[in-house]
Length: 171
Image 1 (tube, rainbow, N blue to C red):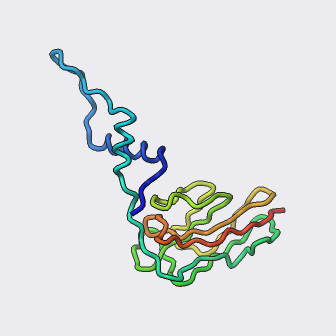
Image 2: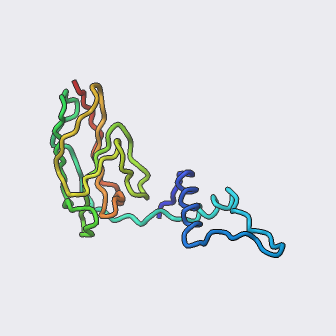
Image 3: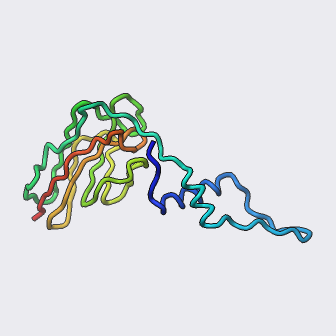
């Protein structure tokens, strides 16, 4: 099982886990000393023991791809995008069905950490509603697009079901 390698993520997870369920420290009474906050080293050691989330298996030969646009296309806003899939089915986020997932559009970025949920921001656009098409607007210039299928928890499959990157130019 893969291990989380991003130190920032490890520290954030460790701090969050350390704070879970603990009461706020009370002021010491009768000369007792308060417990010191855990050191950064202790937090990092604790975080290093945290294993990445279990990934859902993808069937052999499963793939996602762009129906439109095509690699090298010159387009204008709004940009029509249609997602294709083979060997799996598209379901809504939260719907735990075998050999299924939902699309994520990666814009001008690479694959995220594969053992964690796919981020949700301007570079990682989620289609948890089960959509297979969308329209987006991008600044004029050259952009790269890639698709990544996420399981019901937004975690990439094992192995990941991702398209090749395509490059488009927005007029």
